[in-house]
Amino acid sequence: MFQHSGRAWSDFFGEFIEYACLGTMADLMQLQGENRIIAKLGMMKLKQTPSPVFRELTRQLFVRSFTCDTIYYKIAPIFNAIGPIDDPNKAVQLLLVSASDERTIADLISYNERRKVITADQFFLVDARIQSQNLHENQVIVVQGELHEGIIEILASRITEKYKKPSIVITQEGKGSARSVPNSGFSIIETIKRASGNLKSFGGHQAAAGLSIEVERLSAFRYEIQQSALLEPAIRPSITFDHEINIDQFQDEMYEDLFLLEPFGNGNRKPVYYSKDTIITKWKPFGKQDAHMNIKTKKNKAILFYHNNQFNALPDQRIDFLYKPSFNHNKKEFIVTEYC
Image (tube, rainbow, N blue to C red; front, side, top):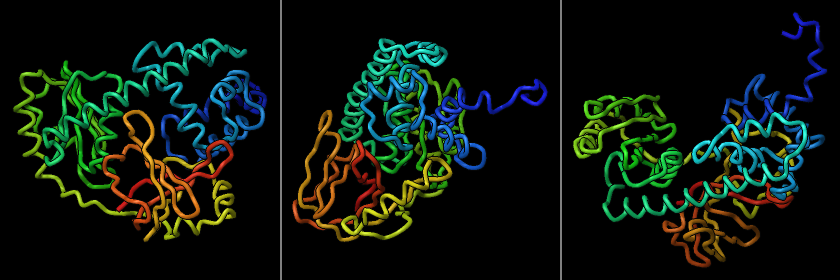
């Protein structure tokens, strides 16, 4: 396009690369080939010479260090959160202006905070229902209730992550979102297709799907989806990691060198490490409904998200877990992704 117009691509590169970077990473595109180059160059601009909008956004978010985690967990959610609960054009308009808009940015941040509160509240409710009705004993966890349609995808993902089983979350009106266990070979769309006689519509792929159903057909659908699931490969939980390094032996030099390999993401994931026979000296829940856990080992601190009621370690108990490094306000931090 630039060749035909006679314009130099480099003249426009700086203006648009950070937006291309945000879109590429927020949409979880494969960070390979040109996508990785876009993400890398965009992050460089966001670190060094961000546009007024991103400069003001990072200021209000109190971002003091900038890594791919900054985009995935701080910036991208700001733009993704408004769609499910309000008008997404508000976020689009913010990106189209050349000057920073402090009030609009503050409003967007508040939308994300609302979304997090709604998600935490509703996950607490659906998880309590799963436990009280023993839904986690089924082949596919199917849960329905008065849920916000805009977050049922998030709820399904968290249920699947917690229980290591496919899940389907359905609103009171019959809108549903489904997730399968990653890399399990279990096709959620084929499972739904075989039980689709009870559905108004459905669509998706092996890992995720959406559906709609008349609520009076839900009981029949629950039965048929469990029968259909028996035709899929059995899900055998497995532990996959890159290297075995006890978290207390993870050297500062390794930590710093690791982040030279950024940006991480889909297709270029951050390495996962296995910490065997690790002594837990202290642990403490935090967050809404104490959903998360701060863990203290002999030399380091780590965070375990959304697994507090499954964590039964006592001080000085030895456990095995998977973890990955992260940055938080220029301090090294570790995220526990799984424990045994």
